[in-house]
Image (cartoon, rainbow, N blue to C red):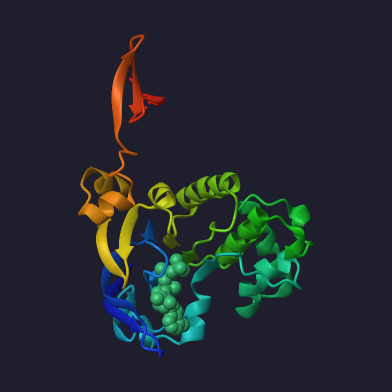
Length: 270
Ligand SMILES: Nc1ncnc2c1ncn2[C@@H]1O[C@H](COP(=O)(O)OP(=O)(O)OP(=O)(O)O)[C@@H](O)[C@H]1O
């Protein structure tokens, strides 16, 4: 379990990115922080592994304040996947994936073996292992980033807009694979995005933020849709424009779900 207790962050230049943030992130499930650009998502995510230190309050992992942990050791014990994959360009794919293990002093042979397994887990062909990141598509690079985040089998995986830079079709593919992977692995995932559809697809718990890391609402996707906290949330999730309004029509004995414009979106299961 990760817990933020009245956490604040004011950067050295006086910018207050996070005012007063509290949240419990349950283990073995996915929590998505979603909000517009600049609302403090990345800052909040990085406080977990001390890439950013809070200037007020506490972040706890299993009841231990991260401020008491040695930053480098803490960082190595937590998986981190960033936008643009963040791969080292002059290292092969397999060496990129093996890096967290090599830093943890795992032998070269063992690290490579586990890196190959991680590549397989994210659906990448072993034939790509010897290539350099520049020889891969954007989607493949992101998969390598996820493999690297998982290779050391961390309990916690932090993901900062990992699918933000790929086209919508590849993105949908990566998202669905992420859902499957999580069903298999059951990690504690904290995922940052500005895309509410992505948040609803991946999140067991979704946290809708506004500027200053202010929580507008926390809940399951169903709870948020059923009972948006205020007009900001209503608008953010698209309820205000009727995008989410569905109704049921009887067609040839079937119950067909149609959207606001009358377009069929599915059939109700009996
Ligand atoms: N190192 C820094 N020094 C000063 N201000 C910073 C620093 N990092 C972030 N900020 C500021 O803190 C605020 C929150 O930034 P943060 O990156 O956490 O937001 P975000 O929601 O992740 O945004 P985005 O979706 O654009 O990445 C912004 O106003 C940003 O300019």
